Length: 105
Image (tube, rainbow, N blue to C red; front, side, top):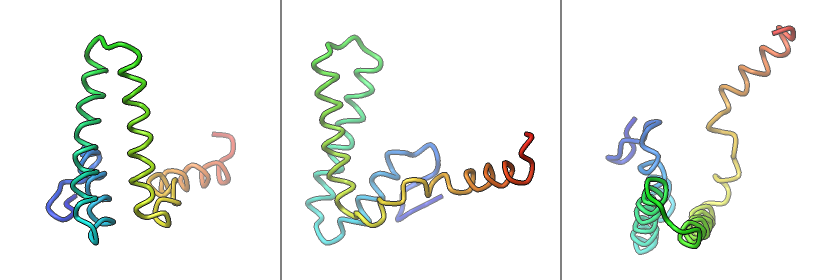
């Protein structure tokens, strides 16, 4: 699936984050640039922490930074981000339909 020139399928989590930022920071390209750089930095940092042997302080700092980044991204569009289960909606409906129609499964 393509969104504004970015592949945003299941595997492309970074592109989906950048697409959300791009869609919601159109008025302020500085936000897009700053948040995009932070997304890239934190992905690299978490990969380094995951595949290396890093001290707890570095990992905790990265977790704090990702919480701050998440808050900034969610604040770009509070209305759309209030739909936490939308991505899983189809599977949830299927689950509940099976539970009601065939409760013994």
